[in-house]
Length: 343
Image 1 (spheres, rainbow, N blue to C red):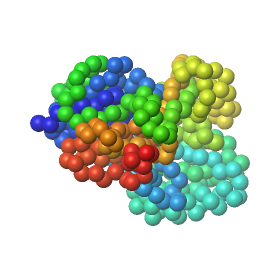
Image 2: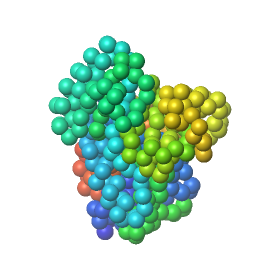
Image 3: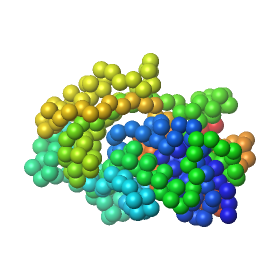
Image 4: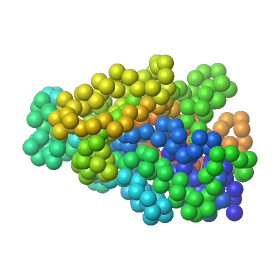
């Protein structure tokens, strides 16, 4: 039985541990702060695709991962006997004007080919939606590929599933076997320190959780604002993208503005109680794609980082390719994702 050590108990680290364990490896996950202590412990949990045009390796990888997600999270739920909050309920986006309407329809035609008839991108009247936000054109984009989950619940379910299959998840330990570094911002800082140029950085995000039951309804996306109806009777609002900040975990007026915007767009939220505010730093690779593969100059060590905004959506496929690399030596990581591309 092959020993593997995963450093980092965020969504990438836990997912890779799960994939390695299912392949028969003896895995330990080490994180001094415990599961989901960093950006994976947020509130939003939107699993949404990039637009179906200008196809590239990143979008193809993301499509595969989103299509894998239902089975992945169902298996985690069964193994942990815990809810993950996963549901593929789709996403709605308003269309602003005639030009945007024409573009959305062209993208719908592209989706029929690029999404392999496994999901749809449809342009429909607002009157056809179960719930929506105002659309100046009276048309919306409704896709069936987008899904959502509850970040904290899914991370905790993964950690429990791993313990149930005798994978150690602990705060300290000595490395055994190959080591996968999925350590988020801290890992990017280490990579930056050993390189002549910056390979990644942290982007702060703020989000809020409101008490309102819209379970099973699609997520809403308007000008960068996510409105995510979780299955537990809450709605998440997020998120900001801040390159400069004085406090990594402090919330401020930028989040208050997001909440106000969400209430204005969706009057049903007007009196919904804000039950939590959250802020954290998300790891962003310079390429904006996940940064995966062997750590240059450190034999037996691997990197899985840079899940900025799309980490949960990318996790099932990231876990699969990293397990194949670490356990079988087979590298099927897209060229633009390889750690070497950032060096």
